[in-house]
Length: 439
Image (cartoon, rainbow, N blue to C red):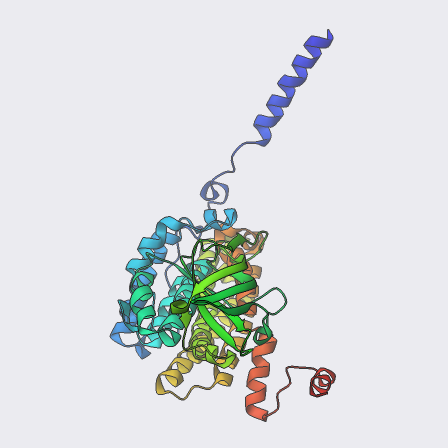
């Protein structure tokens, strides 16, 4: 064989190998025909204690219209977009048509829902896809609510109607690279200038920031040393938003790093209701209620998926649902969902009565997200190998829960908020650190 013919044979062999190794993956329904993937979402089976009876007719309508949309429009595409870490912008009009953006805000084109209805709606989004629920949470319960509670009348009229329809998108920028749980110590500055303010600094982990039209930015007033709030518009000179890559959870959410280099904000875009860090608590009180419902929704979806899977999948000549150990795990998951739901519901009622305390909201967020972790771990066990692929929901939900367990206050920080409330003793800083700060 000549050198030339040998080279040609190598090319043929390489081409054959390439064709072999680059074959597209089998469709999951062909690769694993014994169980239905999450693209055909299972019916809801988790309302064992008939929680629906506690809801008003308005709240039930919200639940069912959101459930129908999520199962029909989002379930078939969520795995594809999650794997690519891209957001499905084409579904935003469908999410806008649900009329849940703006939640409890009244007027300005917002739905004016009860906080229970808003929470139920968010849970139904999370039941199918946690990333979409975080998109709505950031946009609605943080950006929009800050404008509604802390903005001027002109701000509300200018921004809220389009935000409510999701024809414009908002984000909320508090967290910084050096200040997460210790957010009140943030370093981004706002310096007074003629007819406005100059913002300098950096933000991190800001959901929706890479495509938001309206950015709510918190910065330290260099004159008063207090935290103020500002509305920054997309493409403002000096504003840069870049996507955070390599996340293992909420991969569809476009979290970003924000750089502010001499960004000018006119006087009329300063939020008059944010004059100290304490003013953010008005917003965080509501958002912490809402974020407590995300793990509830995620756990509902995972339970529904596991229930169907165990009925369909057979081993040793019987459905997996016929085995005692599997039934025990499934029942434990179901019990967790009932308890989590009732705690979330009671928190909403306390808020509606005007008696909810920060400690109660923090306890709910910490405890519910902890119970959700346990629930999803059991679900991952029940699905065996299929509990490690995103086609059957559980693996995706397992990963998505981790950032939710952390944001809006980590488990530890939220327990300390409740601990301070029930003991009267703040223990956020080590004793040595507190001593040094007094010196």
